[in-house]
Length: 473
Length: 161
Image (tube, rainbow over all chains, first blue to last red; front, side, top):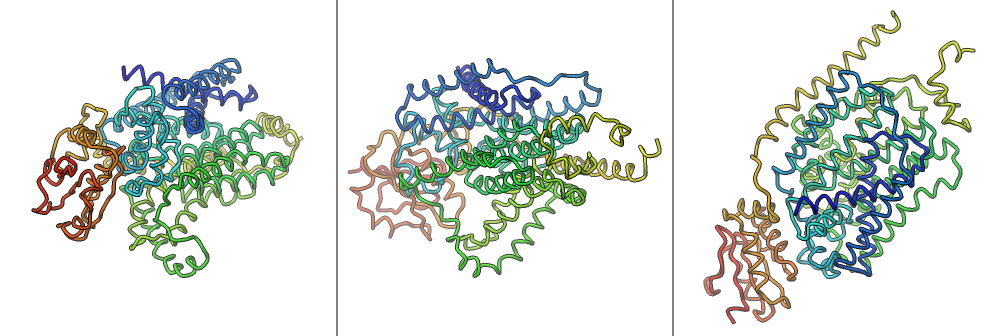
């Protein structure tokens, strides 16, 4: 029964996501099967959680589940009709087969780990709790929950993408089930691995490199086994996958000049603040990178409409919290210049805490050292807006997160840092891997004029196919 | 051929191969120990809370008993949960109890000592349905409640009155 319920829940999630993907792509881009699966999962979880929240204003129980299911199935049918074209497959080389086998084993291990371990502390008491309470109330979070001081520890103000994806599983299972809820987290790992491999292939034009990067993701202990890892039921890894999707699409848009990537970027960008409160910071950074690309690529002003869905989600959630008199977290002091000035003396200890975190081999292995080397490689390519966007997407969130601790209201702010910094850094790890891909592939710097060409897609493709002699001529 | 395998290219290749091998080598022991730390256990609907409660109180499958106990209480009044300030186990136990007590309203009271006599004396017994002690000593004047392993005791006020 549980297996059937899970099948229904996952099937509808993927159907909704695939439909949205097909609507965004509109047959104007070839996507690999891995990309289709990954984007379908991301858009599916985003869409279903948003639909459950919105439809929950006027329906509950079976009606709510039925309405959302109808939309999911309809989207799935639209997707089937608009079928996204797949990339032409070539015969894989032996080492690509080996790497694919390694990735498969790694994904299986992450699934195994998620079943061996319980939900983490935050996974249960910040995220699953919302799914459980909503399920017990016919699929709608009780308004009283938001102002219940006895449950303020569960952060009622946190957004609902993760808990309402769990809720979707519960609605199909017919019970709240902490064990089955965990299945969504390794699926995010699968989506992250697929996306990382796919973007790495697009960035480097080397399949083996994409597969190698996806395989190496597993070897960052913070992602695999540390507290708050991908299988612990926390929102940080799912957020990192959405952020990877947004940053990767933006880079591909610059490189390949295909507007489909910009639409995909806009969709992933909109979902960032819906996954976790910290997603707002990632949204700001990714949107700033988007503005940079729009300006450098001289895209039409209408392109800025890409930021609208995210703004709508941010404002709607804020309005909802105000309307329900939701309790606000007391982890931070008021964000104002006065607090900033009086707490500036924390800057150096914070910086040394960050450096100590980077050096923590049991948590990160040599990942940050490798990223530092990749950053040095990227310095000569800073004229390329895509590279600038990737570097900003990696470094700006770290700087902003660190600055947040200036406003920490904890008696010992370094305890606050120690408890959360590794999870915050995890959110940019997949983007760090993209920077490593750029460094390893070390393609020659793009000519600045190329960005401004009107029909960039054609020119970019032609450029890669020309021989040196033709180029010279 | 010379340009294809220049010194720069070889150095580049060696650097990244070295980094990849080092990353994997450093990570493997940690990931291996993390992956083999716990055996695969059968999962139930209350898999996580059962594990937490077993860890904190030593009682197996306590979540279900807690839920049925809370379900038997009237919904109109809150449950007061006492936790010990600075004791992470007590806080964890209190929050897990609050999680399971839904849809009852709860009040988490953090106290400094291990005897919540003063705080209890301030509570109007007509306005609460139960009192929960998380790794705290129940005052002698309060009738005993249901004890879950070591460290968790629930006193139903409405039954006593």
